[in-house]
Length: 298
Length: 248
Image (cartoon, rainbow over the protein chains, first blue to last red):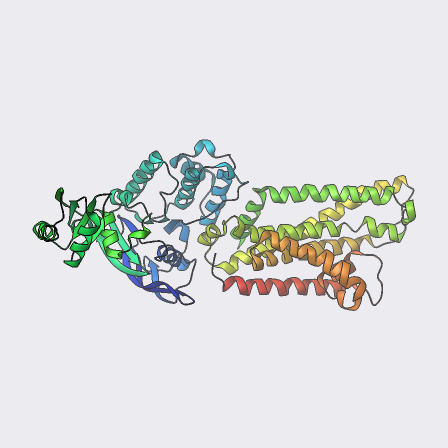
């Protein structure tokens, strides 16, 4: 099973550096989340990996080969980006074309994959009438048609209802447990925390952090402080060297200071604290603290 | 490459555009032949069975070529319009091969389409002429058949090349038909015939008309070379642009 390896990957568009010397790896048998704010370079990186764009320098390799040098790329990597569909083509015919492009014998595989993603009954319907969730499933079916060892998925949970998200999570876990590797981007950080084994976080095209999701979350303990004077306490804690971010209407999440230090700052500032407790960092907290751009979370 | 050609044909077979084009061409062809034969000699129209009359009857290459031009544009630009181009490039990352497959498919289909359209024209016109007592044709049917076939093939190539260049289906169709009917036929043909005869539509006219006007029309063989030259030049330009351009 080939690893996905990015080494010094760089892509510039005029004055903008979309991906900046990015070096990281997605391992086989693991679900790796690719996280970053809007415009951080996730989709560009995936396009570079899939040969849809040319890097200015560095490399994006799958099992040591560029995507375009793979003998049957669709049989090695299945991808879901923002592919579209001909609205007046049936789901089955769409997959027949994708199957032919992947060089696999068509009819049985097409019907099998449609059944796997729960679209068997919609096989003859025009894709133009599909819901967003059905299109996501059809895109996943297209990615799976070559029975690849790797999946590269850009926002695969978008448009799925809770049942669809649950189904997708199970599908990807099963794929990884069977030895496949999954690289997926998503804004749904709580979902990623449930689904992914590893996380790669990038900002402005640069690697910020990479590692197992569990260790990322545990590495960032916080104290949740509840107070009626949130703004004033946040200012006082910031002056004392804390990293502070709002958490609800009357609470703050505070890092870099112990509970006792927080209490002393509040006392010195004559501010009331009604509740205080330790809280392990969740993935969202880690993400925000790492990229320091709270406004981008959708 | 054979697999890519099969895929292009599968794409055409599984979308309505090609079938609509086929039916539309057949309808327009039959209607045109009927009206040209049945209304011959009426209100100043050339008499039935004359060269002038047969020029109109056997000018169905205009229909097949322009339908193929539009179909070619849809084959190329339609992939960007519906964003199926991503799946296409994921299946075959070498873009040049995709463009060549589309060009070969559109060119080959155009040749077939042109030949069949002319065959339909002849199949409808012959019994109609027979009922009018016309059995001898004062034009070279073989040359017109060949011309219509080549013209439709070349317009298929031009369509794919224009679609690949613009990546905009509606814009390319309006632009291409505007060029043919407005720029060339309405403006350049009457005002600058010596220039217009070297352009694609000028060459197309020379290939599909039995009335050769020296100085205005190119000889059919030269017109064929000119048309193939235009199709090749635009296809090469499309290839160069496609290979060096970022996907949207």
